[in-house]
Length: 322
Image 1 (cartoon, rainbow, N blue to C red):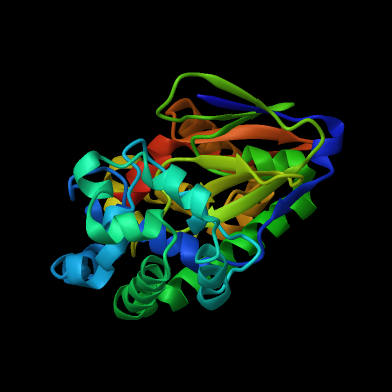
Image 2 (cartoon, rainbow, N blue to C red):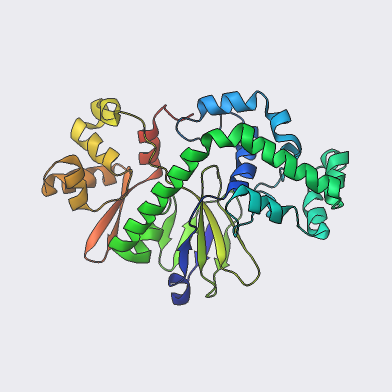
């Protein structure tokens, strides 16, 4: 569990990155493709893309396939948040000081880091840097470019959701609904993570929220003099079709429709509007869903905000993820 501690100054300095970062998604997508297909994490509609790309991953990814830290996450030189487009981000990555390249590559297993091309990159040679640039461009063009419009559209959807939530309920509401299984317990944001419990104090530097399409586990870090950076899975709005037909026999069609309507967090009156039912009926159905562990409810000012729990998300996802 990661626990991010906010001061009042931090709450005034919470910012969402304006666009997906191409270089970041390159590194995270390679890591995603190298994970076993049976892992529970996936996004709707990626099964065909993954199958096509994985068949030729080694020649597509080149040196990128070896730049996979065994402890998880990605190397720092792939995180160039000031440059969201691939060209500028890759230019900055290829200018990484040799000492930093060497320190990062040193964590790779011995047979990997001693391979000729990895040694060239660790030594900061022109050949090593050119190979990193060439293989990254080739991988993006052959593998990620077909998905890029979807990733950009997902980022627009996510940003609109954060803006709407911020306008309706302020920073508290935005943090409370950021990711279904994350918990906002003011002034602490609790983030489940596969690591020992850790307290992270923002100390007035603020928080930059960075949405990512391919991220699986939370990542965070801080550049010198900058805000804390927290990477989270963006909300794309992707959904399986006819969720009420699938869940209707289990929950009842109206209750299934209420659950489906909460893919985007909403207050009780908005749930009623989305589903075409009365306000008392919407309140009754959200109460039942909350007691069943499918929905969580957070008080925001004089109203409430309903969000899906991880169980609710999984139930809606059904067997359409891939």
